[in-house]
Structures are given as structure tokens and as C-alpha cells.
Length: 341
Image (cartoon, rainbow, N blue to C red; front, side, top):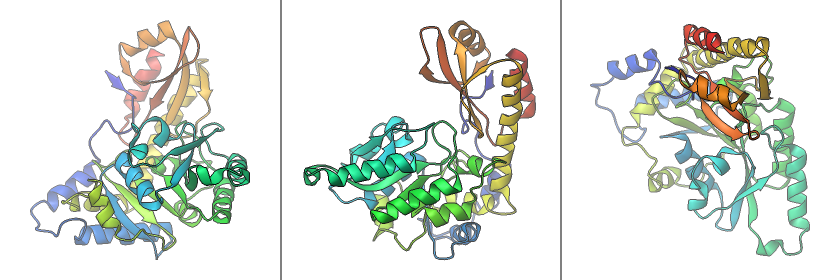
């Protein structure tokens, strides 16, 4: 069975596993106080061109979003997100579980646009009853978005300016950041993310690691006692060496960039085949996620030999599905899929 269902089905890249084995018998301090974690933090700061950044390693994406958003918000505040935002659609209410409301606004191809954000914030403060409402306390975006689309540098800069005007932080979910940065047509690099976002995380789980995400605070804005808050949420690993060693390896000799580029290249081969065979795209995504409209009978036939994700119903006879490539996708598997189309 071919698998294009997501980008975290495989374990971890062999170089990460090798380093974990090589360091396995070393006795190291826990909770991220080991030298490998410190080395990884230095490499991430260098990659971000942000020497003052605070870096923390958490266990997974949902835990990271929940912890970070809860830590940054006051009790009366919520987080602004596109209606398609991952925290709003696919995290089981984890943010709301902390007592903070997600303030959704319409999206454009999965993106929260500067115009929509500014209009929302203006309308909120013009409302004479806003003291009785949930205050917008931060803005959440993801790059790539849930639809595999990317922000431009100009869009990030404008979102940053709007957030600065209203004194609220801009937070970027980077679960698939490695794939977004690897797209040939993007003008956004990691230092741009660090410059325009107040905080973000670099995803490891979906980009070659067994588990782990690297949270980066870029403006001297780390919440007080953040490690304590992480632990209260159950997201602090006693064996902090696990994400530390993995991120230290990912950010050695350009491995993180290499893994991202591989997935995007594999998606490019598949995208070209979909075009040549006359398939209809639901949305144009330059990343490792491809969204295709399938006739339902065709969907049933294809599912007999290929794993892919249901996305949404298009109409009575058609369904939107997602094919995802990853750091581990083999070109031979892509060619087998193309032969089945």
C-alpha cells in the first residue's frame, strides 16, 4: 500500500537515529539542560540570524500551540486565527481547554490577510461594548497554511506592523516550516520569520524527527517561568536530550533544508503528473501538500492501493483529498502512484 496520507508516518531520518544511538549511554542532565540541547539552540539562533532568541524544545505541535498561546494570553484574551487555522480545526479544542477563545476570521486560500486582520481589530475597538467581549490578545498564523499556501515577506511584514500597532504578538505555527522554506518561489527565509514574528516554532515531528518542536521567542518576550508553564501543561520531557539531539542534528550541515527540499521536489513530480493527466486542483499549493478534487468512484478505486487524506466534500459526486509527500518519500513510490492515476 502506497502512503501519501501525511508527512509524519515514518520514524526519523537515519542521521538523527544514528546520533541518538551514539549518545544513548551518555549520562546527561534532564529537561533540556544537556549540552546537545544547548548546541541546538545556538545553531537555531544562528540560522534565524537572531542571537538574542530564546529557544525551548517541546514534545509536539498541539502541546506547543496550547502551551504558547496560554502562556502569552491574559485570562480575558483570545487568539485571532483564520477560520481554517490548525488550532481551530484539528486540535480538538486544546486552546479552548485552557480557557481562551479562538477568534476566527475569514481566510483567503488558507491565509489570514492583513486587510481582514486590520478590519477585525478596528471593528473590535470601535464596538462600544468591547469591554464585555473577549479581547484579541495575539494573532496565530501557520506557514505553510492548512491548504499548503505560503505567506510572502510583504504579507508577514504587514501582519507584523498591524500587530505592533495594537500591541499584540504575532505567532507563527511552523509545524511544516521546513517545507515552506524549501519552496523555490518563496521569498521568505528563516531570518524573515524571526524578524517579523514575535514568536514561532520550528517543526521537527513533520520534518524528519521522531518528535519535538523548537519554540523561538525573538523579541525578549519569553513569558516568565516558561519552563514551569510547560511542565504544568505536561509538555516538558524529562529526557530533554531527545529533541535536543535531534534538532542539533537537523541544524548541522543543512540537513533541515535538505529534507524540506526533498519533499517539495517529490511533490513537484506528482503535481506535474496531476496536471498532465487532467486532474482538477482544489487549490494551488507550492508545498508538499497537494489538494485534488476526485470523483467519488475514482476515490474508492484509488483507496484500494493508496493512502491519502479526506479533506472535505466538494459536492454530492466529488471529494477534496490531500496527497502529502515528506522527507522520506521515495521517487519510486511517486512513480507508482502516477501509474495508478
